[in-house]
Image (cartoon, rainbow, N blue to C red; front, side, top):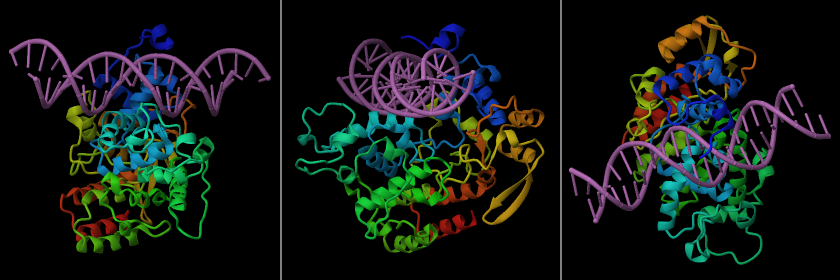
Length: 414
DNA sequence: AAACCTGTCAACCGCGAAAAT
DNA sequence: CATTTTCGCGGTTGACAGGTT
């Protein structure tokens, strides 16, 4: 195998990352942002190429990553999105907050494909295997196979049924944020709006974080095992909090509405960030990092099968960039209409490894090429503990409608 | 107990697009 | 406008762990 030209030239390290390297990278990025990736390794003192640093950060070290097993609803959503978007993993990943394209790609190749085949569905075309010649492993060509233009429409999965009704999916559609409004809420308009909302949220700066609620789509996917019913779907434009309350009542009356369904719903209430998992009652990133950021992924996986409730914290949908933060600058934190003053340095102490925080207090940004992409929204971390409580409620195996109502109250507080 | 098989996942590679020069 | 650099994406590889024979 060849290597990167830059790796050859500079004899850079390859392969697995050591904890020390991770530490360096985290410290550097939490202080200065990534800026130009090619300059990161030099500035962080790493013998890696910038590409490798970027990958490590995006796929493993970012604090807003949701780790652990995929829920059934997440898998369903991936299947649905794959039927529409094909192997555009990064696009699909934008609809699953806290998941990386690499993670989704791996899941698809190792798990979902097999499951679909076992159900007699061709994973590439999303059509019954019997109807697919050869069943080869070529990725779907969205603009052709899924457009459903002409020819006999064979029985297909709900996902491809929807996809077939869509206009040709091409790049221009991906980038479009315009949504077609329809007087009658057909499935087509549902999906159109779903995608439009997701596309707008995929920028990380969606004005309406509720726009990416996945339920309407999931409600069409009984074949994939979703336990959601149409009645549990959130109508677009409705108030999610009202929906939560209403669904809470349904829960009491409908115990078969599974916890997973709820988790999938609530997990999409905010698309911007994920609270680090497995740290209930111990809510610092340093602890989370100690528990999760090592080179033994198998030991760091949260196997609860549940989901991680998201806060409004994000490195990508930031309120202010790192470069604008000075160590003792007072920041105002929005908490559901209330503002809370705290010092940035205190905040760092509470949220990051002490060493990184200490360095942050004594350092200034390296140069002016820090990009907006390395921004950090402070509000989410400050409400972390609230999220931990909500996580506890939502991860309970037999969640009740009463619990769900308290979740709704919790969101109102957020 | 050893060899083999299988699944998972982090990381690498090459390419194209976008941005910078 | 051409060239170079940087970034992001999707495909692929290889290490590792656990299971099976």
